[in-house]
Length: 312
Image (cartoon, rainbow, N blue to C red; front, side, top):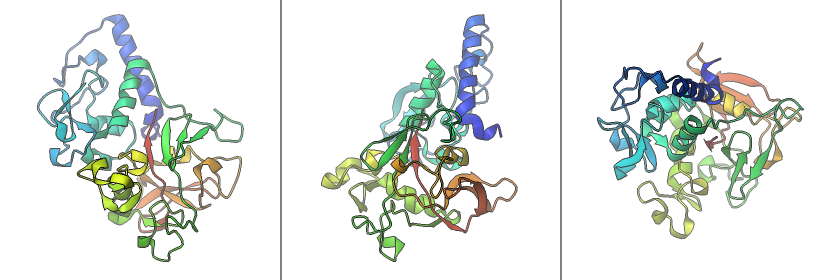
């Protein structure tokens, strides 16, 4: 249970650790030689450089790819962010703490992930886990951004809005999913085989928002022209949510679907999460937006997906 609560609890612990250290003046050794004293080092086992190959470090993504304490940013070289800003945590450690899944380590930390983590360290900013929509906990609150995304005002996470199954612009009524927009509510994916990543996320992050057939991996917005921007709503750090994050948008005051209408068309059915089932690695957790239940299924099952980004 503790592992899945990291996005909402460990950042608070980090700030607490820093506050105690500063108040007591208890400066100690730098056991992992990362330039951050143990007393204020939230990640005492940092390894430099970390295991994020430079060749895979995406644009606007950060990682410690050299033998120093400064984060590199894509092909632009050194950034202004150092381990002192992240309380001694590398990108890999930030991803683990944020519950984003090991898959994301390969491409480094997005700008929004870094900004959110640093804000939490500096000022105690952290996501607020929303209520259940049925009167318990903080009231569910969302903002329609008008660009195919919706923001959760409690957690700060931005979510993808789906297109109706009959949407003409997205060709959602086509019987062949390959001809439909990735935003169509009727699209199905297996967890195994990488289809949510190789097809769904690849399109959201590396294709033009106005024309999903145009690859903008290398040139970004310049590759898109009038069909831009590059990436859904101009962002290129979309992910598959882990199971607790996915459950956070369930509205238990309704049914079929159990979600706020701000999210647009949502099937009253199962949506994949990033989280594998520990007892049975061939399975993964999913959330049923028909009744709000959390279940696990075989990774070869065909289920729906909804992307998320940012936070805090």
